[in-house]
Image 1 (cartoon, rainbow, N blue to C red):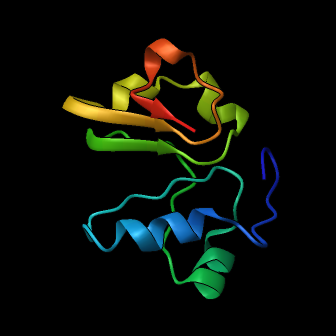
Image 2 (image 1 turned 60 degrees about the horizontal axis):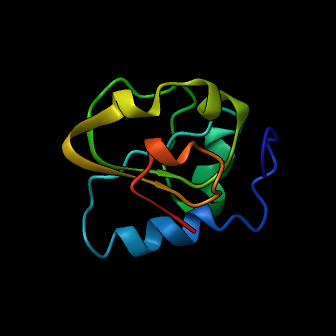
Length: 98
């Protein structure tokens, strides 16, 4: 849920489970969620600060203001993709959206 620490019924965990079928190298960032609660409820380690690395793919699953104010493109490796599940980023910044 946007700009809220409530992790109940999150679909982000479902997305992570599907991604794990393809790779174990997943970084999860949520500036609002309590890392201990996420670990206990879903078994995932998360970070609250924006990552500084470069990624093959970036998926925006929750439209937190912090994500919208950040440079999502700065997280990309060459030939990477940005997928906007919430449809909130400018179309010129993404490679796909729902």
